[in-house]
Image 1 (cartoon, rainbow, N blue to C red):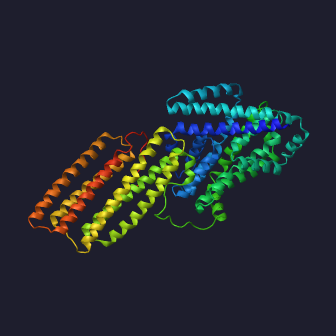
Image 2 (image 1 turned 90 degrees about the vertical axis):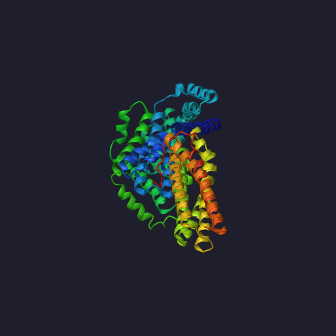
Image 3 (image 1 turned 90 degrees about the horizontal axis):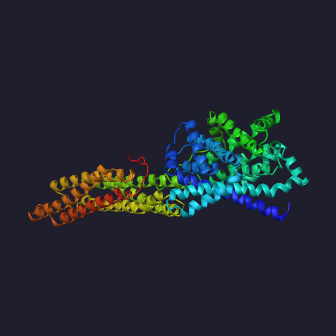
Length: 548
């Protein structure tokens, strides 16, 4: 094998990997909200979880990406180990879809696919059409890569040294180790299957020589998840361990089956003239059978994971992100969905702080002041951390609607943070009342109670409209009407208070306090209205509010 062949092989592998990545990422973007919907359907039913894992992986074309995303979910505390196990097992089956695509030899149309795909990318104005063009181009590039690798490896058929190496792969231990190491390096079981199929296409291998390599590559694909779990909590590390146990047990089981039964000959009988399809069949049979056997026994794998990583995680702290984890950024549509949940959490904290501030004012309760201060620290923390995630997500390749959502959220979290600040101002005014430096008359208290009810109403309606994407005409009318009512009542209450001041029913200190309270209440309503209509130009599936 000459240097030219080696360079051609490396170039072909690069094309194959890039084509697979382009096709997977573009499928993910084209699927858009469907990926979000699938990710939302987290269920304790492990069988439905397996279907979910299969579907997501079939779309994004990478079990490693799905597993890393699951590790991120578990580390963020929004998925438990039982839910994660089913999804991971389903992802292993989903990763065989790429092998099926490459087993059906589309080499003849690959150049045409590249031409059509690139044409759509260059001349289409709609982003969805561009994504479809990227899928088609990625498909063509993938097969051009396979063709290039196959051409580069044809001289290997005449190499005695290579024949000796391939013969050694028939040793179960060497074959398993070779598949594991190669996949660990390139971090893609689908790519390893593609390389094996390219070798088969060039006629230098048959199924018997690489069947143990196929089993080993399933272990090698666990490296990505294992690396991703470094620095996570115990439950997330156990998730990666379950993934490893699944593939190690499967590899051991099929190694024994292949040694003591005519498994390889049976697969060759099913597709006698097509080694590419034989490789695909072994890969999918391995994953389907292993999933079928181990999914009902997932409790055993979980107990083993607890034995390997003992102990309990510390309780999640308020001063932490609940729904966001950097690993989720690998799947942008899901990252945007999780971002919305974290913003909703921040919004509910801001509403709680408003209620605490008013309770401290009316009840003269210093405990509420303390709770308010603690929540305000969390709101400020979330503001900083969510902003950091927004910047990172905005740099990703997003569909147009998601990019609009991310752009709107920069303003939304600022409005939420300002609601928290005005609630804190009300808390400071409540402290003045608690300290006896000013007081409110019964009439003023009744008027402020009325304003509180209006503010709670507009906060609830605005947050609901935000979660729905500002696409409810009736609720939009209600929010606008409530804001107008608040503005009008604010002016009326100021006039009423001036009359009380002129009549000697209150003093200057109480007057200043009352006016400051009205200003803060009105501004909270203004920020709530901004939030309500922040998503008016986006189209998306409503998410479930944490506070509902």
